[in-house]
Length: 146
Image (tube, rainbow, N blue to C red; front, side):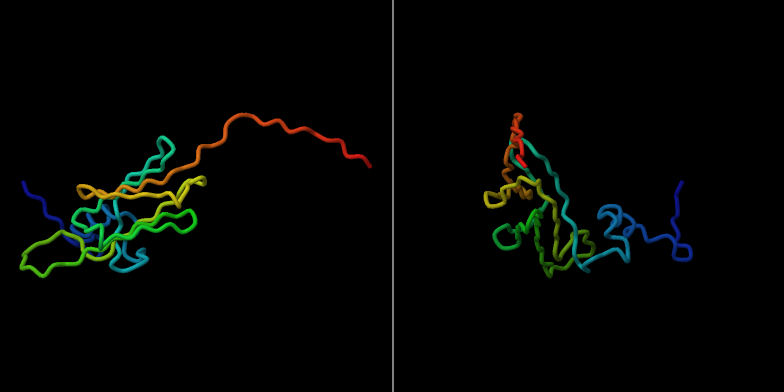
C-alpha cells in the first residue's frame, strides 16, 4: 500500500520543509526567522561539580578558523560557519552558512575562566561557577537612639 502526500491550497508544506521546521524548532517557521541563512546548533547543557558545561554539535567545522565563542554579560554565544564546497552532487542535506546558539549563564558564572575544546565534531565549553555560599549568618540588631 502506498501513501501519497499532496499539497492542497498551500496549507501543507512540502515534506522536506516540514522536517526542517521540526528539526530547527519554531524559528524555522516562515515569518519567525530572525536572520536569513542562520541555522541553530544542537546543544546539551548541564551544571555539575561547579562547572556549567555546554556541548555543541558542530561536525565538519574547523575550530581554529570557523568557530567563535563570546560571552556578553550573562549570555554565552557560539557561532560557527561552514562554507559550501563546489563539488558535483545530486542531493545534499548538509547545511551551509552561519550557525549560532546563545544560552544564558548562571548568575555566579566566572566568564573570565571559560575554556573550550573540540573533539570528534563536538565543541565543549566549560564555564566555572562560584559555589553558592552556604551556612546561616546572624545579623545583630542594634537599637537606634533617638
